[in-house]
Amino acid sequence: MSRIKIKDILSSGEVGQKVLVKGWVRTFRSNRFIAINDGSTINNLQAVVNFENESEDTLRRITTSAALAIEGELVASMGKGQNIELHAEKITILGDANPEEYPLQPKKHSMEFLREKAHLRMRTSTMSAVFRVRHALAFAVNKFFNDKGFKYLHTPIITGSDAEGAGEMFRVSTLPLGNPPMTEEGQINFEEDFFGKETNLTVSGQLEAEAGAMSLGEVYTFGPTFRAENSNTSRHLAEFWMIEPEMAFYELEEDMDLAEEMVKYLISHAMEHCADDMEFLNKRAADEDKTKPANERWDLGLLERLNFVVDNSFERITYTEAIDILLQSKPHKKKKFKYPVEWGIDLAAEHERFLVEKHFKKPVIITDYPKDIKAFYMKQNDDGKTVRAMDVLFPGIGEIIGGSQREESLEKLKTRMAEMDIPESELWWYLDLRKFGTAPHSGFGLGFERIVQFVTGMGNIRDVIMFPRTPKSAEF
Ligand code: ATP
Ligand code: MG
Ligand code: MG
Ligand code: MG
Image (cartoon, rainbow, N blue to C red; front, side):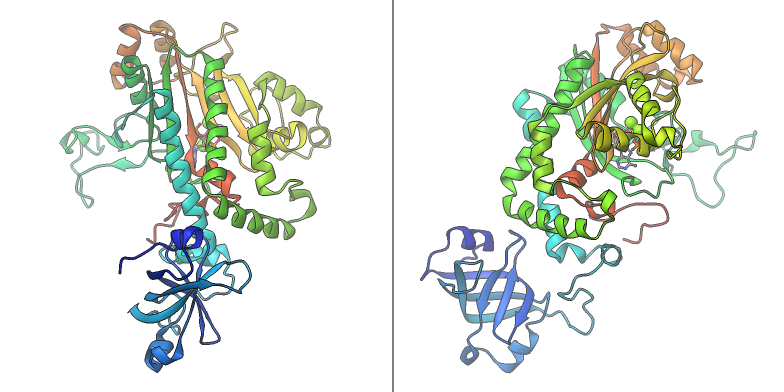
């Protein structure tokens, strides 16, 4: 008998049909009812044990998380929330899970506890729902761009450049750890390294993607990104995935239009293709909300929030307008912001959240930031003070996208690099893109885990990636 997935049984199984299912026990009640799940859906299949067929030994071994194969017949179910159940005719234990040792019992565990069991936590309903939604979002990213004719490029993970200039890089080296070769000046001699120079894990694929855009027109990368930042927040990881489209001939407005369209597409796709998981996560978010202090509670449920974002246009304001709004705000006047507001500051999470959650009550795109708080490659405005940057800010998360129109003038780019002490010798190839057939172009980076967080309603970014990498934690 060939195996059938539980998702297919629950959606189109027929009474009287003989089936074989394989999966893991979620619960076993009254020595009779097995809730079994194979990962294909959030919903469990109920299998009813026939005592006469099963040995004492088998019954004893049906414990939470044991792996089973069950053959039987589908029958109409009286149980609530299910139309069909499986009358087991033969149960085979594929793998035991000793209840004395198995750490995840069917009670509710805290997210902190589950993080310590990252290799097992995907067996919980919540985490399996999160990872099915994560998959749907990743698939939707590729579908969105493919349908528009964008080309998927794979930019390098090991690179010599620090695209963001923030110095938050993991060094990559093949030099011996104990006593690396040293230069006469007493520095580590990277010339003796496999790569012949100092290299690092990529912080962004943007610069390389720009080279692609200057040939293929519209491209994107979607891969892992690394930042050695010592941030212990609920939205920073040391290893995260980033989606970075880069488009020739786009100006900033078109860049923002694409960002808004893409985010809405991703959210809609997840709601459409993961309806059961989203229903489950919606209930979970509502329960979670009840435990929060009143001023942190949402007035909208998760699904309502997502629909709201899809149905309404994002607010678009300049950085200068944002600062004016903040200066006029109550928290500023009452000195309630931790970081004081003045033109020139990088917006802190509290400022971003005020604008999005309190002032506009919708996603906001902020443009034209001061050049001194942004990366060297952004197109400079004529005012000499600001650059054509744009950040997309979301409720509950803050910055979800950072993007810009890129500086296309070789001279301006060189001047800016000199001002910021970035040696031309490091980015000679990047400058070549301006030397030969330069053109206006734009792009942005969407932090994949942040959109997964927003769509699933998970409060902590560590709970939307399999094995989170954060300071002082790489247990797995
Ligand atoms: P933040 O202000 O949140 O630290 P950033 O401005 O440093 O972000 P960018 O360099 O603009 O980040 O990167 C583009 C996008 O990548 C961000 O908008 C965010 O969605 C995501 N991102 C950046 N850093 C991280 C991180 N450490 N963990 C997860 N996602 C991140
Ligand atoms: Mg940062
Ligand atoms: Mg930022
Ligand atoms: Mg940014």
